[in-house]
Image (tube, rainbow, N blue to C red; front, side, top):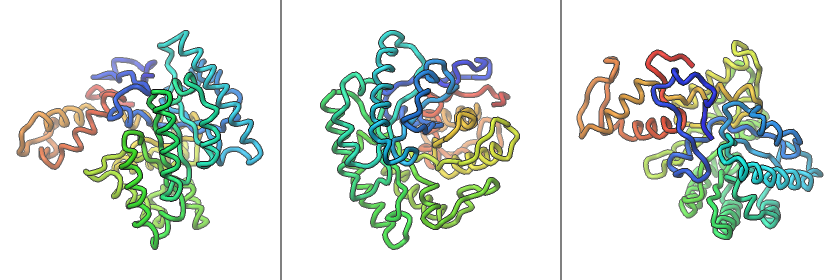
Length: 351
């Protein structure tokens, strides 16, 4: 997979590199920009993937949880297995086909255990990972133990993406104890953790809230307060996980619409606060999200200069900001890792 493969190459000072589930995890964890969630029973997914209908999508998640009815779980499992088998055949015939990373959102740990028994080597070959809904200290160990067993059994990289979204983290009286326990689980399974995801919609629903089209998740104070604590636990220097931003529920094909302008505002706040990646629920959101991660030339140049310096302070390449080597070193490493995936824009390019 490579982002922006159909874009005008003259827009890039440094073009994006290709990636796959076999890429180095330190780079791959940034490759999940817009992650498109779709009901697993949606029959048109295979043809849309082959026809490149999801332009610039790097990751899709086949959902067997909230997006389907309780009675449809058997059908959903059948559809997922059929899709994985067909994608495996295509991948063998066309190794360079620009397929995104494939994830499956299971329903709960019991369903994941049953589903894992249905998987074969060829399915695991095209499956990048599993999304774990309502992830907490009670079910987390079970989720990751099943995942690890699958990965070792088939000698294939397979990643977990825990979704933190339940009351144990939202409620203040249990939050910090719960985050500490989750942190301990993730440290034990560190090699298998690709991203941490957060459920903005689920967090809001706990209080009967839903942000409107003019309001970002950061304006919903009770949710924003929880999100900042999640970032504090999982993006600090002794953890360095990638935590994705919550879903934006509004979509439109009109780039100037309130829906897209609201998404852009929230994306900017995501990035400034330390989130990377975003769950999306409509193809119109894909380009908006992924283009937000293209690295600006001055960011890339400053990051290189910082990492090549031994210490001290100096002006940025545009002469309008301070680069202080030691405090900005971790920022610079992130910029260069993201540049491998999303590329570096020309100095005056507009995306």
